[in-house]
Image 1 (spheres, rainbow, N blue to C red):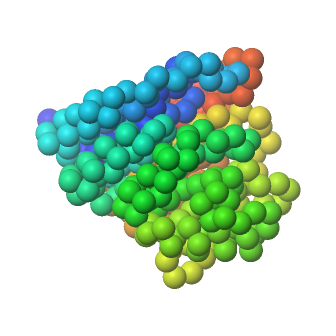
Image 2 (cartoon, rainbow, N blue to C red):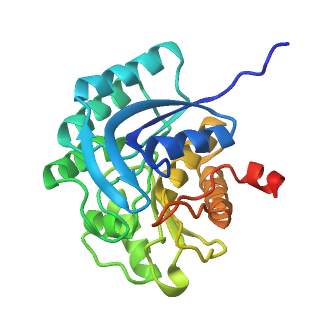
Length: 271
């Protein structure tokens, strides 16, 4: 029997030993969409549902070698970036995206946590802004990352829209400002600026504390849908629907914040 050709997506991100975010979340998301997932590891974290206790960066040369190995043999229809950690890795990834002509690039600018803590230094942020963001088909900052990139405080829908437009000036083809860190009625409301106009994506609000990995999952789902040939708007809408359902089946594991349920169809079947 000849199987149909499968689409390929690449995640360039860090490892989460707790399995809720990073490479682990991305590969599960790709698999859900029946897209073959490939990976280039940037760093290794020791973490669980309570937090991160250690981070070790891989050499930029190792990241470069992984990307080249995948692209030169298997090929890539879409890619996403997550935690890139430092200037050297960001530079290496940016060079490879250009050299390998990866056009469907989703950049999740992992710079600031949902609680507002800065995760990478200012030199790395500058490299991200000047080297990688201009190559993105869509940039997916959370509230605090959007504030840092736009230079404005974000508390209202109008400020989310203004921030998205300002961030687009960095060169990304489009910007999706995520509302997971917003409050009250704006929690979970995302604003997408496509270079010409803003559109709002809202979804059912899920009351759960187990939201670890939502940002990684959303960007991976967008990449997977782009790999499948969907246009960007449809890819974003489908990705948001996927994350919303995964939140309904979030996993209450560990003693802290558990991850979303990436494999919810299997969970539905077992229930």
